[in-house]
Length: 422
Image (tube, rainbow, N blue to C red):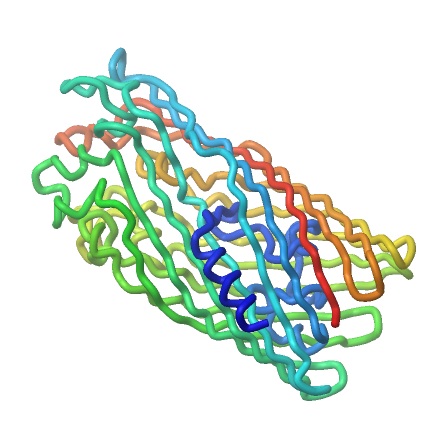
């Protein structure tokens, strides 16, 4: 089992990880993904390290393996400038296979140990170049050379400890051991404009860079009655090492921490076989300077208070329904709504990371193959979201925001997972 865990962790670290609630996933674990992401008051899989570590005290011995095929469709456009700078472009790279893995072991009636391996991301764009003419020949939408885009992946390995201090209540702890990698391309205009960056050689086209960090998720779970459960979970900000190769792009000399977040969830067994659950989640993107700083600030790129993506904190509502008509089948559906973190004043930089989808609908089902194993599938559709705002490109030449830029995205995903009790 130890070798299996190590191999799967390495596999996940190499996989592109994309997400929907900003750059967090709408759910972790295929069951949660089928019900809109609601998970904090559930214990039907082993993904407690990503959801609520306390709930693992009620899971028993379990292994979950799965893969999600994720398809984001992203585009950006500019108008109002005239020939040469107006135009539109769609991002390539529209399908990704995302593995998932979790394991839980009941060490005793009161104590559970396990591990969850999961990912965040979503800042993965790949716009072809050559559509624009910024005065020096063919250019991409941000007046750089060649294709334009960024690629951010975050892998989190979360060992899990859960302790049941009564028959119906538990607390849990999951250290969050994080690895992330990043690259940017096509941003030569930002590196080449005198005085714009504190480190012009560390802005773009430097290949992948990586960093590591650590944090902690803590949780509480209680079955208040046979029909009603509640869960609470809080994850600290994960302080990451700096991206040295992009110290002239991100605020605080390449810093890119993972924001703190917290969940409150309820689960209600409304009738035999019928379960209704909901989660409220808060993700504090704005507290990470490289993400939350406004795009127009009187400071150089890469400086402590330098420009960022201007993302706001977001609230997420997740609602799910499960129905088990018999012992073999369970079907589920859900809805997930996330605030839009991007404002019109910050559209230009967010051409690189158009995290604008808000409303998601999900479907899923579990087929119990034997008394010990099951297959679960989940489908998600994120409806098209968009934000429009004035371009800030003229500001870098001493002008004022001008014209209109628009970013948009919609998404689909389809996943399959195998789970085993043992």
